[in-house]
Length: 165
Image (tube, rainbow, N blue to C red):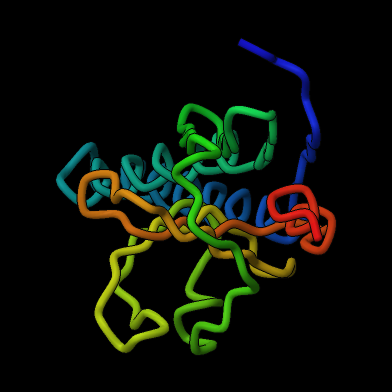
């Protein structure tokens, strides 16, 4: 097994981190205010749970790591990782999804999209809003997933490494 790294990129988004941190602080303040005013009722618990969710987002979705080796492409967002064997990559292209799907959020998302032939495809997306995205088409689907989309600063370099001319 060859573990040589052909490409590695660590991608982060200060805007996304600031958004999640702002929401985290908002729900902490609302939860603290509510529990001080009314005691620890259902709303206080819900607001503090939302604080916990966004605190997790702040730390987990801070950095996307893209690693390409001769054997695989690995995408890692905090605790979550997705590896694609190189021989399971049928194609790779720029994401041409409609804006409401392409810019639907940061982090990891699962969505249904129309493929090149018009058929519905299930896609996993590892993304930040402000960077270009590539879509990797799988030869054999993994569960229901047929495509993986991910953000990168250097899409042309990744395309060249996956499919040299």
